[in-house]
Length: 175
Ligand SMILES: CC(C)(COP(=O)(O)OP(=O)(O)OC[C@H]1O[C@@H](n2cnc3c(N)ncnc32)[C@H](O)[C@@H]1OP(=O)(O)O)[C@@H](O)C(=O)NCCC(=O)NCCS
Image: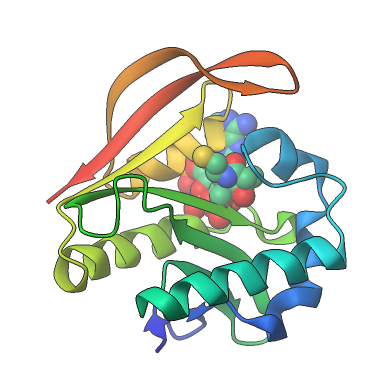
């Protein structure tokens, strides 16, 4: 199934048709620096392995948690995922997302988050969606605020990346 965001934008379950665009856009140091688990450099093999793994798990669970952000004329331009942080039956989950650099600052992620959260509240029985942002990621914090998330806390030394601690700012959108 697809989730319509606007006339131009939709979310599609991630699949192997997306692998070239995924590998092309995720091979970006600025995306690596602002996220926890995306490797850099990012290869076609990384894309293929990750998509295979996601598709296997999602077909076992009969649940889509990883979506391609698709623009009508450009195909995949970003990604969005629920991490199942608290298990598949929980009322809450954590969200992660990225948009390819050529499309930054056009309001895309804000639009996607607004509609996707409504979808989760209505169709996924979630009543709390969390996002943990590196404390230096101003663009992501701004997006969350514009999309209706509220800042709830500051978590010191929450993550380790490249052998260095990173503080996290916790946001949540609560039904
Ligand atoms: C964070 C990210 C998803 C935002 O996507 P986007 O489609 O560009 O977001 P939007 O256009 O909806 O909104 C961006 C907002 O951040 C603001 N912004 C951008 N860079 C900024 C900066 N350095 N300081 C402060 N605000 C900034 C923009 O001005 C805009 O706010 P405005 O509408 O008030 O002007 C994108 O930058 C990205 O993929 N970054 C790398 C991966 C990442 O950080 N993922 C999130 C991990 S928590």
